[in-house]
Length: 199
Image (cartoon, rainbow, N blue to C red):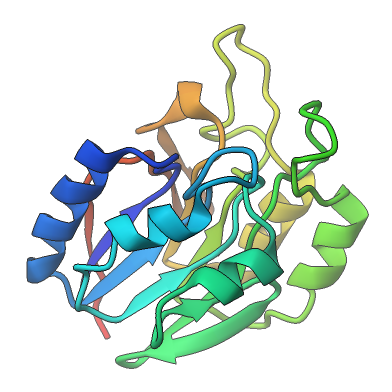
């Protein structure tokens, strides 16, 4: 299966146009959160992606809540947050929000490590794990070099052993990747990222 994945669109019209155009070649499109900015413009963001015809699976970032994303998502788009689905024989599980809690204030949708651990506990197996936040120690460095990823997500990747663990959130680490066991971890960013995943 040819998978197109991205994160952190943040209402960028130009980046959305490139993603929509590329999606014509995709069997599955994955969006790893932060479609809008500070809980504003989510309907507009979904409109920018309306040209995507391929099956689409998304998780909320810290810039939109689960309820807001479910309300704004077009018909047929699957929104995951502590839940999973199957597309074309691939098992996907998603967890949105900022983990651990961010310093951004009341607008940010965040989870504590304990909350994230509880929500990830329901996943026993997945081919692709989609989280907004990166795992601790991989693709999670700020411009100052500080590792701000999630211990709970790192633990879950080690336990679940997905083929791919896709994330975003930390803009300074867009494009960074690494391995946890045999699982490839990629911080996507708002560009076209292609993955070939056998069904």
